[in-house]
Image (cartoon, rainbow over all chains, first blue to last red; front, side, top):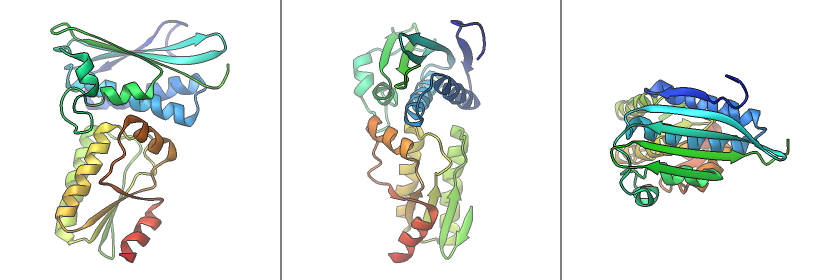
Length: 140
Length: 111
């Protein structure tokens, strides 16, 4: 992995091609955490949704990927940051328009269902930060 | 992209950019119209994840191909991909699926 223990891997989210690199890094981190194929697939899919949001709605940004541990378990934390217009109503964005494929909610509510920990920090004009954490079910 | 007895067969590669997905959509629809295909098979067995973007495009292809009087079958979805889509609340109600490309061709031939 890149960097010393505790130092996150940072990847830019500026282009279509960057989405592929984010998904690849998410898979590598999920494998390091000992996740099953189903767990890896959830993590990579969530990362794809959130990276696209940062690119399309946030005008680009970056992701910080960290290996995390707690007693007996390994996991992955991904923090998606953009400096876009922000989300005026996060609660609404989590539900609004997901199934219809319209609006800011696209992908956000779906991503939340795929991970164990999910936090959105967003204010209009100040950009958006989405933090997700998933844990491997297999013990360390 | 292959053509077999009035069926277009497209295999989707492992790592897709959004631009590649759009190109595939346009290409498939052009070819379906040009050849007068009765069926379109999209083999996704190599695809490691289907996110909401790709899911939406698969639905759009299905609906557009239907308007060209043909039928689309998405073939070979991996089990982990299927369960992830369902967990996200995306069960692709418009999209017909098959276990493999061979299974999809059988389904189209049986019609």
